[in-house]
Image (cartoon, rainbow, N blue to C red):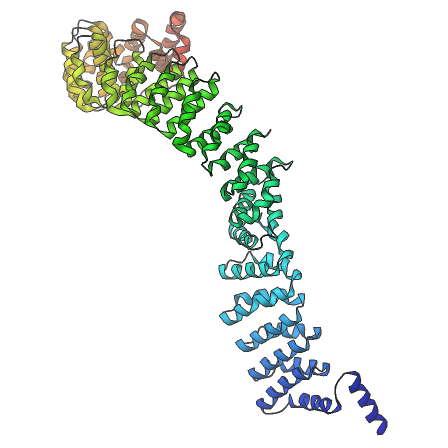
Length: 639
């Protein structure tokens, strides 16, 4: 008996427990089975304070007690004891129905910091009770680095609150989270990428270098996210970004430049200016964009040099930066309009147009006499952006330029100016380059402003205006054009009026004038009037054309051949064949060939073999063979 007592005493001493308290532990273990819940609750609480390993398994059993307060107290005591054997039991207790039990189990697992609990704890972030959810992140953080991989996976959760809590946990864990979060920037899920970026921003300065290293990723979207994160980190990132401007990888130099530009730290100005001379065009472009954020007039001269950069993207970026700097760069740009390098002159003109300083208009107008067409086009584009009415005379003068691209640019600018361009354009209808003038008048679409000039003494003006009005297609001009067709003394003007009436879709009011024109003394006017009647396709027009066909009026058939092809009447074939023989041209040839009637196709090929050497094949192919200006029709079909 004495020996057993001595051995028990020595065991208690070895365990650091006084014999009296050891007896108490045994008693409290027994009390866990007591019929009264209050006794069991106090026993569970006391066993935690006893710090005796013998209490672990009984307390694990108490996690299944029918009383919730007993289960909760057992969970707390197991956390105090920190025995790894209890981890799985505590994980099971996370499914308890009572909030207090779940919260105490989470607290116990936090104290134990065992990696096995990470997954189950993450699952508790979706618990319906906010108190439970709130207690989870700190428990996960206590586990540390082992929790990072499953947390990263859990960032894919659809619940925004869950993702937010996971992000907070990753930030609290610190350094071990950085590299996995950077890798997560490539995730296909946008919300995951956003959560990772937010976490990395909060992890600064630990995350700065890894984010900069991400700039070398070939995926632009990844680089863009990293740039955004560094911008939000702000000035703390500058110290690492400036050295990155000299990195051997051009992608890193680009990203660092863009981030520094948005952060706008004064110490980054000089390093960014040096980057304008970088060997890589995309880096130079990024440097331009970065400098544009500062809007510093001191950057103007180095940027002007880039107006002649061999890469178009760099030139455009330099122009945009000069424009953002604004009026303070205008004086320097005006000075370089006389630079010997046409690239610089052109770029300066474009920049001045976007800056839109009225004081630079005269200098830009002077550039319309430049020897280089690209420079002239840039100057015209600049004047178009500025929309100053006093530039109209200069722009109309550019319609005479020998370069078609310059003329087209001038047309576009005059159309942008609107009706203030009409009178100057009308004054040019007798001059060289009237085709461009007509094009501009048509695009301005101010037909009412053109009608007065139909009374011009110049038949060239009247003819040009008639053609322009036809292309504008305003039904309100049908009456004056009909009068021109009926009364003008010039065959060319009457022909133009007939063509114009045929071009106006709603020109049925011109039927009588066109029917009368079938008796015109001019053959070409009669043919054009027939073609216009076919286009109008009114009831009187159809009756007249059918009547003329019965009279074998070859002129009318030649003019209205599309109408007769669309009708597709078999007894019209011979007369149509005769029409192409006598009045054929390249458009008629093309339509006959493609209309689907073998007899007309053969006639077209015969005409071409006899007359092909007399027509402009290039013009014909461009205008007709490619189907650009005509509606192809099928024999007996419709347009």
